[in-house]
Image (cartoon, rainbow, N blue to C red; front, side):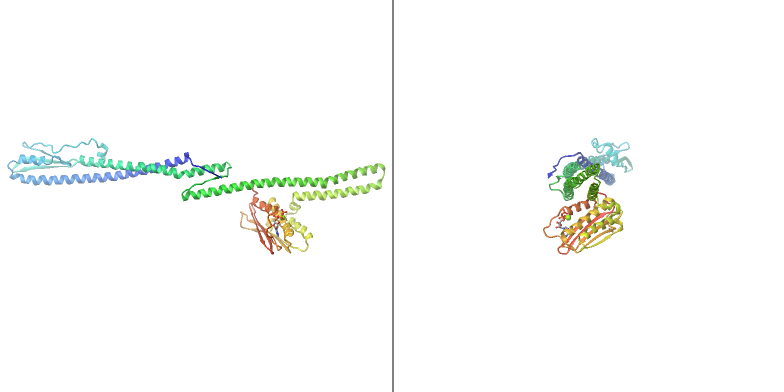
Amino acid sequence: MRGVGSGPSGHTLSLRLRLIGLVALIFALSLALGGTIACLNASRSVEREMSSAIAVAQQTIEAAVAGLGRSREPEHELEQLVASFRGNRHLRVTLAGQESAVALPATDAPPLARVPDWFVRLMAVPPSRVRLPIRFGGRDYGAITVETVPHNEILEVWNEFGDSLLILALFSAPTMLLIYVFVGHALRPLDRMARGLASIGRGDYGVRLDGPLPPELSRLRDSFNRMAAQLAGMSVENRRLNEQLLNLQEQERSELARDLHDEVGPFLFAINIDAANIRRHAEAGRLASIASHAAAIGEAIGHLQRQVKSMLGRLRPIGLAEFGLIEAIANLIEFWRRRYPEIAFHLAIAPEAEGCSELLETTIYRIVQECLSNAVRHGQPAAIDIAVAHERRGGPVGELRVTVSDDGSGMRSGSGLGYGLIGMGERVKAMGGSLSVASYPGAGLSVTARLPLAARAVA
Ligand SMILES: Nc1ncnc2c1ncn2[C@@H]1O[C@H](COP(=O)(O)OP(=O)(O)OP(=O)(O)O)[C@@H](O)[C@H]1O
Ligand SMILES: [Mg+2]
């Protein structure tokens, strides 16, 4: 028994890649979905932050402007008010207006170069602007404009996105690598099994799978090993059957040759001598002697006819084709009844048994023949029952159950199998049926063969 080793194969690799592709797709989809949701949330929160910043700024400016009426230098304080917003991360505050108003940039626009345009568009934070006219003490000081500048917030979100993406990449790359390695490892036994099956396909049944496996695959491995062992057993059995067949053929041929030599040859020789004597007596005119030689020839021919008939009977059961199975079995019983008149024979054959395939009829005949010969040879029974019944179970058109039971001694302890029971078993197996032998020591023996009716002989 040889074990099959492990090794890479194109098939496992492609399944591996497919799994990796699937995992990558799931990562990409979750990234897209998570990104969209995060984008929407971020956009909303930037928007909220901008509007609250603009509201706070408006309140601060309005409160400050209300106090300016008492100031001696309102323009200067106004400028200081606007200047106090310088450096604000969310707002740009400018003062613009009438003749005395001074234009002042409140904040520098932060650089947005690092954020791609598409991302800014994706965030879609609408610009917001409030214009607050400044008028007190009967004088117009222009207006303070407060504008939202979401750039800083967007940059922050963009940086957060980048960090998340980096974490995801750091997580997914080793995950995929792990899956790749694990799947490859897990699939390796399948590769071994595929190579084992290929060996079995080539007729090498000695292959066995070994080594520890996960439970799912170990069941598969055990089934594989059982199948291989069964095939190996069947192959040995086949070889044995073939050998036996050849031996039987040889044996049959040598028996026929011996019969032809011993039984036919001398009689042909005797006929030849008698014919020569007849010729000689006829030529000499001794007619009285001719009759005895002619009678001798007649006797020899009679013997030859009996001999040829018995040889034909061995080649093929006599009467099976001519009279049918029922009649042939009845003749068989008659044969033994003449020799053992004290045994009571009972025969019951279902009509379905008649007219089935010639092979099936011959099989049934041979089973009954061997069982009867065994019973009278080994069992000393008082009665033998022979039954061929039709049963609906088994094959599509049912099966025939052949039973031969006797009330003799049953199988004696220590008696082994001869060719009779083995040959019977092989015949039944070749027809797709089953054979069972039940022995009751001191009470008899019963042989049952089940033969599917639509059976085809196994090639
Ligand atoms: N009806 C029976 N009653 C008692 N013993 C039996 C009966 N049939 C078979 N046996 C026992 O089973 C053994 C095997 O039978 P089997 O027909 O296989 O061989 P065999 O009859 O001894 O020889 P072979 O059939 O090869 O000439 C027999 O030797 C006998 O001991
Ligand atoms: Mg026998």
